[in-house]
Image (cartoon, rainbow, N blue to C red; front, side):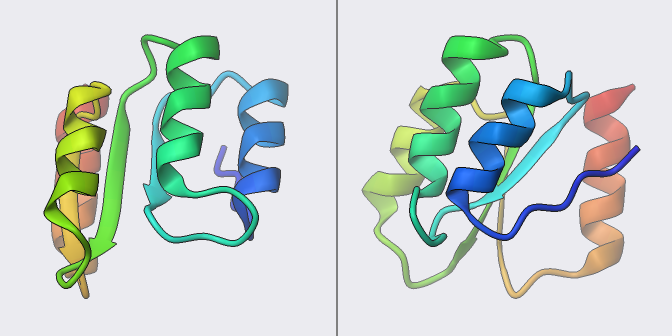
Length: 93
C-alpha cells in the first residue's frame, strides 16, 4: 500500500502510523525538512530503507548528511520515473 503525504508533518505522522517498507522523501518540504524526516525515521523505524530526492543545486553537505544518517539511495531531481521504479525494486527485494 502506498501512502502519499504533502509535507513533513504528515510524513512523521505516516511513519508513526504505518510500518513502511520504504520511505521516499524530498529534502525540501514544508514544515519539516527531509533531513528531519530521516532523523525521525532512523529513531523510530531504524531498519526502513530511505531514498532521498533533491534538486541538483542543493547543498552537497545536505546530501552527505543524509548518507551519514544511513539513507539507501539518492536521486537528483528532475528524475526519470523508470529509474526510480528500478531503484525501489532493488532496495525492497
